[in-house]
Image 1 (tube, rainbow, N blue to C red):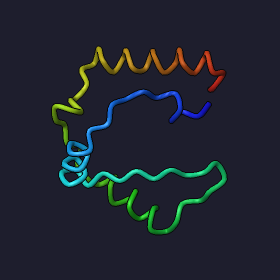
Image 2: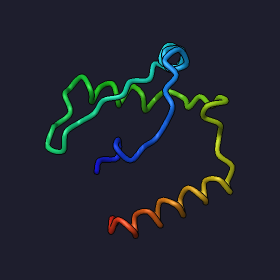
Image 3: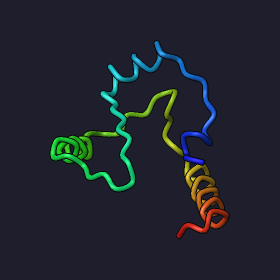
Image 4: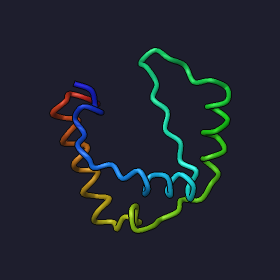
Length: 83
């Protein structure tokens, strides 16, 4: 089962469009053996230099929240046998 099949979420197209316009978010799905194009590499490098914008949908994490996410990821990875 892929990660996309495991996720359950509600989709709000209007909200998604507003976020795309506000944050210029772009999602690309790569196949396992697919290489990034030169354009994709340049986009990633440009995005690296942009500031992180926190809002109500993606608030800044507190140290306690960061620790909880880290522990959850470690636990998930142990179950999946991922290093």
